[in-house]
Amino acid sequence: DQQVKQNSPSLSVQEGRISILNCDYTNSMFDYFLWYKKYPAEGPTFLISISSIKDKNEDGRFTVFLNKSAKHLSLHIVPSQPGDSAVYFCAASGAGGATNKLIFGTGTLLAVQP
Amino acid sequence: KAGVTQTPRYLIKTRGQQVTLSCSPISGHRSVSWYQQTPGQGLQFLFEYFSETQRNKGNFPGRFSGRQFSNSRSEMNVSTLELGDSALYLCASSFLAGSTGELFFGEGSRLTVL
Image 1 (spheres, chains in turn blue, red):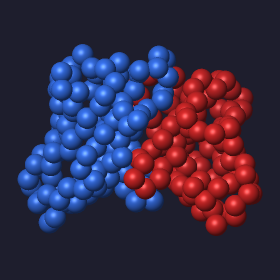
Image 2 (cartoon, rainbow over the protein chains, first blue to last red; image 1 turned 90 degrees about the horizontal axis):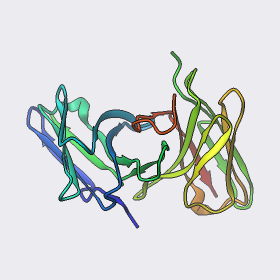
Image 3 (cartoon, rainbow over the protein chains, first blue to last red; image 1 turned 120 degrees about the horizontal axis):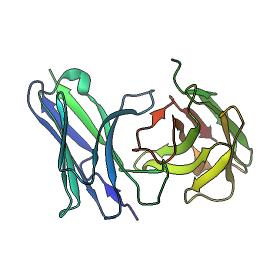
């Protein structure tokens, strides 16, 4: 049972345009949502997070939006840069108490074309 | 500050063998989690340790085990290897358990089972 879903395996965007990566979840008990970025041959690195009590969090070019009623979150990257090309994982935490257990989606490969 | 260090980075085993992977967390971090990454499955949670105690375990068979030492270093072991165990095994650390979910990942140990 996939509690966190990223339905788009890949996304291609032109440099300077907006990238929108989407994520859906099923467990309403999740209280934190995170985005991680992964380059080949490297471990995932934390990008941005959002608490379930908020609907938007912004950090520079990156903004995460949370729609709890739809159980949907999205990551917006504006403007997109070639260095943003990577696999982006959506993750959720908190459904099991005090734990660092994260439930990850399957990832979206973002390709930013120069 | 050194990052999360995983050894070995690459290894090849045959079916039926066992393997031990090692993880040294960031200095001062007491929580260590392990994840398995396979194509199409994203990152699957294996287990989480905090102060030498297993706090959480994912949905993996008993062939997968782990432990944490007093210096917070962690090892995971997979016995009776199967072809399906071929994956990237990622270790992540954080200072606390049950924080906001921001984990620091190592580069992973790439296991190939022949």
